[in-house]
Image (cartoon, rainbow over all chains, first blue to last red; front, top):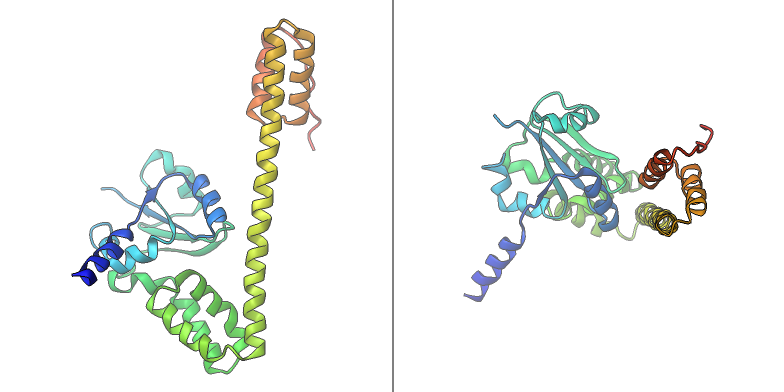
Length: 44
Length: 212
């Protein structure tokens, strides 16, 4: 039960937050030492 | 990708450590970005390092099952090649890349094992530590630049506020002097534009800095 809860908590914490401001993202990437992932997609 | 790839736990885990952006390439608002990143087919995926350098840029969607390790595969292969050749010094930059950015993936874990096995090799350790130090140095330089920029913005805003306060107190000549200084010292700032607007309203002249 405890194991299942821990697994659930780990899975729930890994979420993707999509942003739309590239400049802000780049500043944050430098401040937090992270990569910036950009997805150019087509909405049809 | 939205319905399958981005729903996978391993993909979420990898992307949650990055700052993720999504742009509809058909939107008029994203036309500049589409040009800047030379998006010619969709989807196009781009990964930038914290310094704005391109780490990955290609079109097409990797298969969902391999997505999490996809972006590390090339550097992983290079690291393995150097490792197999016994050239641990040449392995270091590739291993550093995979461990630094994709350490949580299967490929990252494999590289970690290999690195642990050669951690006593002086050339590998020296090269790896030099890469870490260089990275930290570049991050620090960005932070210093950001602090300087913030301080500069604060001084410009303070000058404009002072000029506006003088203007409201009808100390117009003193205010105009500060507006002119703002234009000369920081011609591209939004504050300089406000200063120009006030001077124009009062039909006052000002001098633009000589173009460099």
